[in-house]
Image (cartoon, rainbow, N blue to C red; front, side, top):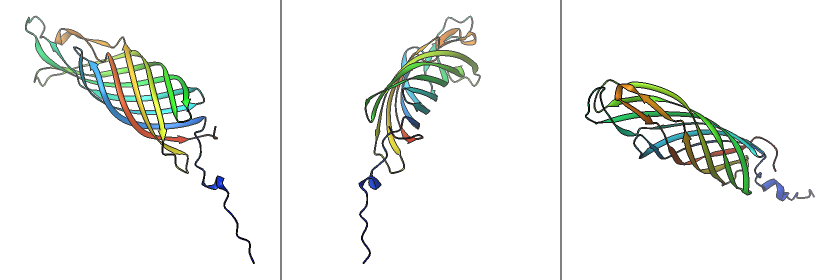
Length: 194
């Protein structure tokens, strides 16, 4: 009579987080830009973590308003700015718990977009390279048998050298002063378990 084989408990165990992990996330939050107005922002992020080192590519869009004027005119007019932000952010990742990480570091960003006065159809483009300091918390939950997890992240940034000159609008305007965003995505092990 054939013996019945008992399953090994490890056959049902979900993989733990590996030292090397890749994550892709999307989310929304708030950005302070223009004349200090907080507006909605939408962002994407791709992140690679290897032990304590982490690096991310990010992209976001926001659209703050500000006051400007036509050259030579004393009258202030409501103006509008479109702001694209592409960033490269290296940093350190410190595990507070097996599924909770604290991350922080510097970053370099490319800002570009257009500014326009009121309902004018004419717009004026700009581009600028700036810096930031960022800090984030990431929580990985719902592990699967394939080593993937749902990832929730809260990320805050403070930007430096982010103001652009728009002489056609008689203004020097901050594209982004600071931001916060809540993101959700997937994290995938790309190495052995830790």
